[in-house]
Length: 113
Image 1 (cartoon, rainbow, N blue to C red):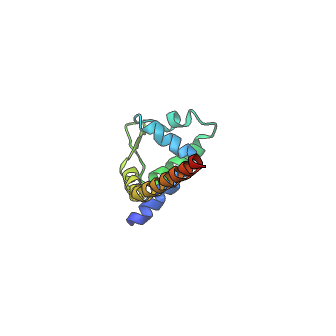
Image 2 (cartoon, one colour):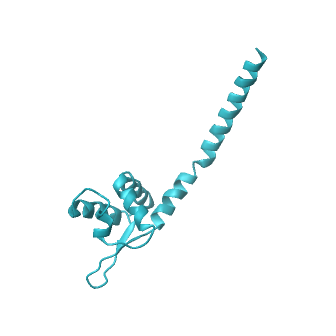
Image 3 (cartoon, rainbow, N blue to C red):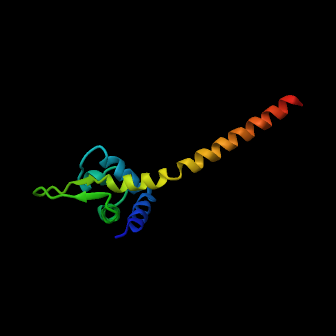
């Protein structure tokens, strides 16, 4: 899978609030499917589908420890997404700086009236 495809998979997986909540829970530590499903009003198969999307995107891995199959967060794809977003920070900061200057000029103009 290319870097662009991985990034697309990451953002597609993050687009769903349930999957973001699952990742937030996994940021606290490993959890089973049952533990991850607990706060949601959905079936275990529905939660499993969300986990498969996260797993295909490389955001989680599932281990095997006897009967226990813990899920764990894999942060590397989130780092890639952060790096991609970070490349736009300078653009937005410049835009906000220009907006701030424009608003200051408007404010000064209103004070002079």
